[in-house]
Structure formats: structure tokens, C-alpha cells
Amino acid sequence: MTVYQQRIGTVSYRFDGLVELLAKATPLRSGDELAGCAAHSDAERAAAQWALAEVPLATFLEDPVVPYETDEVTRLIIDSHDRAAFRAISHLTVGGLRDWLLAVAATDAAAVTLASVSTGLTPEMVAAVSKLMRNQDLIAVARATEVRAGFRTTVGLPGTLATRLQPNHPTDDPRGIAAAVLDGLLLGCGDAVIGINPATDSPRATADLLYLLDEVRQRFDIPTQSCVLSHVTTTMGLIEAGAPVDLVFQSIAGTEGANTGFGVNMSLLREANAAGKSLRRGTVGDNVMYLETGQGSALSAGAHLGTGGKPVDQQTLETRAYAVARDLDPLLVNTVVGFIGPEYLYDGKQIIRAGLEDHFCGKLLGLPMGVDVCYTNHAEADQDDMDNLLTLLGAAGCAFVIAVPGADDVMLGYQSLAYHDALYVRKVLGLRPAPEFEAWLDRLGMLDAHGRVRPVEALSSPLRALASAS
Image (tube, rainbow, N blue to C red):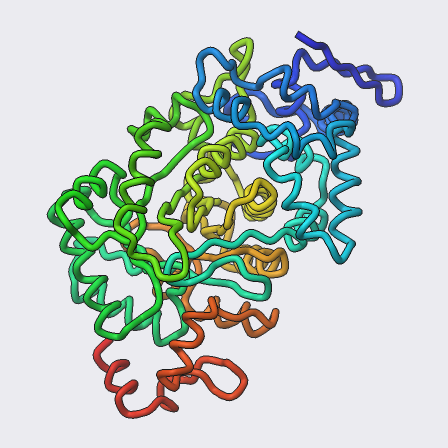
């Protein structure tokens, strides 16, 4: 085990191993305090960041944060590492990588250069460099990075911000769900996916919702994709039964133990990906996986210990989940950043920082990264914090965000974004929906000459009737 030391003034700080160094260098969050791995003071955190800046990137290939022998996520990271892509940056330290990323982000060729090294970066390298970056650094580099994916719409194009329309209902009432879907469509939402969190994981209930969404999509010829967020095994069974499955959903995490808690492993996830692709339901692409992550998931499952039995900080474990996602070539990945609760991200400041970190890390690793800009009602956060995070993510080139009626998910019991929030950020930052979806909105007369969604009273008679139906 390598011991890292850093002196600040007359005080010398010691960090026993890479796991401890990464944890102590992490910006403050309640989950790391809960796990007992957070820095005890701002001075100790600064010392850890100074020491981390001097660590060569190659160290992360030689000193795994979670043991190779006992964790299939670590084996995936090491065995799939692209040594050729890594060669261009292999001489750098973590601090040197930060400087290199910021320098590249300022060039006209940033997107091509960053894409060329993406597969040479491991999640731990990316998590480490994010710990040395200010919020504006995370935004600048993420904005310069381009990642695209497609099914019936294309997400991740520069200058666009897509939305997941989330019409959840506490009893899966089809009328309530249909009303929320139509409401969202009339406000220009739903180009990333129309995705329902079902109240149960019953195969029959899931199938009913899939048929409902597919009927709405076909009736109005909507270029989008649908998803019912059941467990992957439920969806695979419905694929075999002939249900109209577009995207295959699963929550994932950054350790084998946490994924076992979700009831999945890499073999099962790859089988599900192949099953979804075999249906060939996409029109502009064949990315079929929808994956969700969140800082604190491994800790909440008691699957957060790394090399030497030390707790790994939640942000590093979150970034390791992106290795799982990258292996599956997904259409959509999003962190549910404030959903797990204040035990892991205590307040608005921590949620905003985590959202920017997750977006930066996922995008740099080559994922079409979105964020559920959200919080629970017992967190020290409010909708002003979510407005701030939404605006920052829009500036950072986020692929998509999640929107629910009135920003209040009445089924899951948490606060997210409203459909109107998507209109706000698109207008303020000059962003547009996915091009296929925007063309559909325009074809139906739902956009004005400036590409803005028309108010209901300005719609044509058939569309006003559609609005009344919702």
C-alpha cells in the first residue's frame, strides 16, 4: 500500500492508500461522512487534493480501488481499458490531466480530441480529476465533449436538450398517465423517452403500460421511444412474449455487490441489451438501454468497501457505474442526483456539485449523460436550487433532463423539474429539442416562427381538442 503525505504549513497529513486519498480529496458530502471516509477539515481536504494532483494516471491501472479478484466491475474496467487511447495522456498526473482537459476544451478541435482519449480513461481517473475541478471547470469540459446516441430520436447533439417525460401515477391509472403524457407533449417534452416508473413490477401491469404508450406513440406518429422502468428480467420476459418494448431499463451501480443487490450482473445486462437490439424497433439508431445511477447507491446497499476494507467515497463508486453503462452502449444514462436523500447529499449545494460531477464524468467516459434534477422533501434544498442546477447543466451540454407534471412526482414522492422548466432553459440558453421530435412538433403546428412551443390557445382546432383530452 502506497502512503501519500502532504504538508500544509507546519502540519503534515498522511493518507494510507489510494482509496483513502480519493475519499479525503472529495468535496464535502453527507454520504462520505456517514461512511466515515470524509476529510475531517477543509485543510485535510486541501492537502489530499494537493497529494492527489501528483498521482500519475498509470497508478489507477496498477492499484485498483476495489480488488480485481473479487469485483467484476473492476475486472471490466481493467480488461476493457484501451491502452492505445491511453498512450496520448499516459505521462500525465491527475493534476496534469486537469490542465490538459481545460486546455483542450478551449480549442476548436475539443470534441474530436476528447473523444479520442475517452476509452483510455478509467472511471477512477475521471473521478480523481473531477475532485480537483471547480464547478466552472466541470461545465467547460463537459460542454466541449460530444456524445450522441439514437433510437427514434437523436440525443446529445450540440445545441439540444432532450427531456424524459415522466407520467408516473400512484396506481398506474391509464387515464392519469395518458393525461400527463399529453400534457407533456403539448409543452414540447418527451423527445428522450416517455418513461413510466410502474407502481408494481408485475409483468401484466408492465405490459399494459407498454401497450398504452405504444398506442399513444403510434396514434400521433410521435418520433420518440417509450420505456416502463421495470426490472430488466421483467422486460426480458415481455420481449419474449411479444410486448412492444423500445428501451430496456435497469438501475446499476459501481461495485459487483451493489449490482447484486439490484439483481443484476454483467452477463444478464449484456443478454438484455442483445434482446432489446434483436427487436430492431429503432429508426435512427439501435441504442436500446436506459440506465439509471445515483451517488450513495453502493453505500446504501452496504457494498461500498474497497481495497484493504476501506470505504470508497460515493462519487468514485458512482463513476465506476459508468463503466458498466459504457459496456452496454446505451441510449440514455442519468443520475438521479438528489433522489436517494440527504443522508447522501445533504443540501442544495451538495446536490448541485454532485450533479455537475456526475454529468462531467459520464460524458467524458463517452456516455449520453442526463440528470434527474431532483431532491426529496426532507433535504435542505428547494426549487431554486433545482433552477440553478438545470441552468448549469444546460450550459454544460447535458443530453437530457427529466420532467414531471408540476415538478412533483406523486408516485415516487420527490421533487423534480416541471415541463415548463424545459421550456425555460431551452429559451434562455438557445437550446432545441431532438431534431426528429422538433420536426414533429413543427409538422403539427405546435411551434411558432422562432421554434417556441405555442400556448394552447394559439393551437389549431385539432390540437386544442387534443389539449382538452389531456
